Length: 127
Image 1 (tube, rainbow, N blue to C red):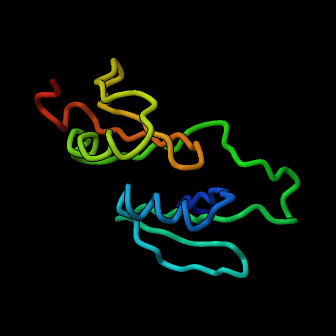
Image 2: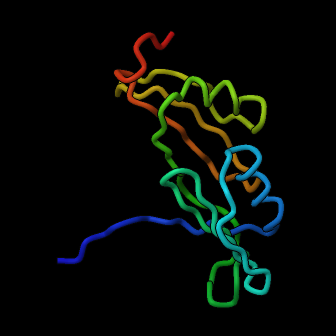
């Protein structure tokens, strides 16, 4: 049986430089590779990999956007909230939800929704 080993989303952007800058400066990603001819880049932070690309002629729908969110499981979510709450547009502030996750959400420079969460049991005192 085929084993799935990773998911590496490709986020479309009209401005590759601006988006690379957001993920590096705001979220601490590192640029792994870039190809200006293809208008493509690969970034990494810890075990998370994402790719960035301008839409090309192979895609039928070239509008920028995503009908969902990207959910990052992190540790020290409270510290991350303190770091990011003034660096990006906030969707919702940090909160402990009834399903046991302490989380918050921001938007990247393209309007993609990025959620960050940690099991509340890992945190101890969440207030």
